[in-house]
Each structure stands twice: as structure tokens, then as C-alpha cells.
Length: 315
Ligand code: ADE
Ligand code: ZN
Image 1 (cartoon, protein in one colour):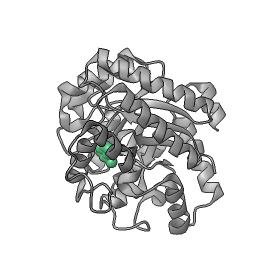
Image 2 (image 1 turned 45 degrees about the horizontal axis):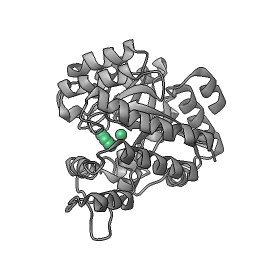
Image 3 (image 1 turned 90 degrees about the vertical axis):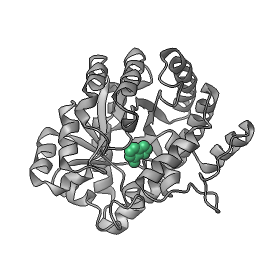
Image 4 (image 1 turned 180 degrees about the vertical axis):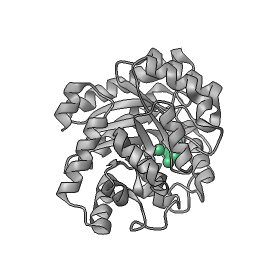
């Protein structure tokens, strides 16, 4: 089955082997990042973010990011993904400096162009990292706005949702919106319904995760009425302990309530998942089949941060 993935963190998709080989080239010390089996090692959500940032610290050049994007898009294609949107942060690509970011982006755009020729299309979503604070987010938003129009088509804040308030980042979202970028924000993963409302107030048409909307029936109705799309990553939510198992995950209840849900892997090697695995678990947990999968991919195509011609091709 051909699928669309709207929520995939570029660094979070780095296979452990890839990070280990780059670390070896640079003689970088990554003690604590991997467990005895060579998988990413973390306990809770805070530990996950620490592990993620430590692994990412070995990616220090545009070439590193180009190699990473090539590897990740190849794996997406193997999973049947025909279009992927990747979160990527100028924070990690040159520390928020615009000129450095342009170099990283040029390297990634070249790879994305080659991958498009090979059959997998992609776009980049610039990601301010919430726990790095509003000032650093502004720098990321400026990088996004200054490079909008090519591969970069959106702004989407990630990081620790419980830190600060979404309104602290309003300037960054306004800046991106003015530049014509699509807006999304991680909310309703760790935070509750109010966090989702705050993300909507920033102007987001999509919400990263958003699954805790299920705790507030009025919000669920609002998401349905407004046609907001949720970038749901069930395997991620379960691996991070937000839900104990697949049957208790709210994705099917949200879909039944009319909410536009889509399915993505978030940070696949961290959560031992793939797109095919997500679809298999949805099939076995909720009896989803072709009808449901066609519907979520149609919703994903309609919500994709790309031009109309591409969107129509994806439908
Ligand atoms: N960055 C990478 N994965 C994330 C997640 N699941 N939530 C918040 N920030 C992230
Ligand atoms: Zn995410």
C-alpha cells in the first residue's frame, strides 16, 4: 500500500547504525545513548529527548544531513511511503544561524530532488524546539521564513510540550504564516486539551499528535467542524508510555467522531516501528482495512504542506 507520512523527525529517523558510524568517523563519545543491543536507550519522555539530542550532536555538517536524508528517504520508500514531510531544526543545523542553515538546506534539497526522481517526494518542516525557549524559536522561524518556497513548506514546533505556554511562541508562528508556510505544532501528546486549543490559537491547521483531544468532547467536535488534521503517531505514544497498549489508543475513537486523523511514525528507530508496522497494528487492533487506510491517506494528502498539483497527485 502507498502511504503518506506527515510527521517524521529527520534526526529521530536516524538508524542507530548510521549515528554510530558518523560518531566513529568523528571519534565522538556516545556513551549512554545506546543500550547493550545497540538500540537507543531511554526511560521516559525526558530521557527520550536527552537521548535524541545526544545522538543528534554527532551530525555537524551539511554533508551529514544530506547523508541522513538520503538514508531516511530510502527507508521511507521501502516502506511504501510516496510522500513524506520531515521535521528538521535550524537549531541542530548551524545553531539557528541563517547563513549556516542555507548551507544545510542546500545539501538536503539536492538529496530531496534526487529522491523525488527516484519516486519519493518530500518536504521539510522547520522545527523550533519548545524547551530551547522562545528566543531560539524566533531564529528558527526566521530561517524558515527566509527559505520558504522551496523544499521548506511549513513550521512545526516540537520538543517538551509542558514547557512554557504556546503563546510565548506566537511571534514565530506569525512570522512563518506571513511567509506563506503551513503551521503545525506538537500538542495533546504530553499536554491535555488546553494545549491543543493553544496550538489552534497560534493558527495551526494541523496538530502533531493531538490525541488527548479525546478527553474533551467539545474539542473533538471543534476539530471536526474546523477540519483540523491530526498527525497521529500511535506507536510513538505507546512506546513513550502515554497509552498502555494499542487497543486503548484513541485514534479509532477520534476517527469515528469524524476527526481527520493521519498516521505517521514520529521517530521510528526510537520506537521500534515502521509505517507498515503501524498499519498492521491498526488492522489487528481496530479491524481497519482498505477503506479506512484510503481515508486517512486522503486526509493526509489534503493536509499536506505542498502545492495543489502535488496534493492532487497524492490523492
Ligand atoms: N521531537 C522528536 N520526537 C518528538 C515527540 N514525540 N514529541 C516532541 N518532540 C519530539
Ligand atoms: Zn513528533
